[in-house]
Image 1 (cartoon, rainbow, N blue to C red):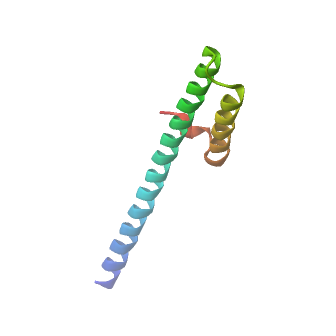
Image 2 (spheres, rainbow, N blue to C red):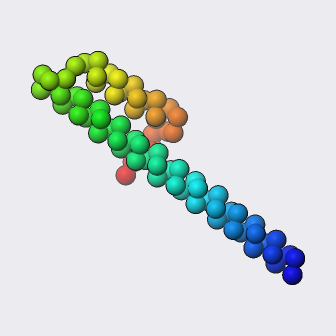
Amino acid sequence: MAGFMDRAKEQAQRGLTQGKQKLDDVQAQRAGGDLLKRLGAAYYAERKGTGSPEATQQALQALESHIAANGDGVLRS
C-alpha cells in the first residue's frame, strides 16, 4: 500500500510541475505578445508624427530583453 501511495504522490507532483511550467510558458507568451503590440504602437506613433524614436527604441529594448530571458519561442502564437 505504501508503494502505491508513493507512486500516486510522485505522479501528482509531476503533474503539478508540468502544470506550472505550462502556466509559465503561457504567461511568457502573453508578455511577449504585449511587448510586440507595444513596439508596433510605438513605431506607428513615431511614423505618424505623434511618437518619438526614443519610445520605439525603449519598446524594442524591452522586447529584446524578454527574448533574451525567455527565448524567441515566446513570440509564437
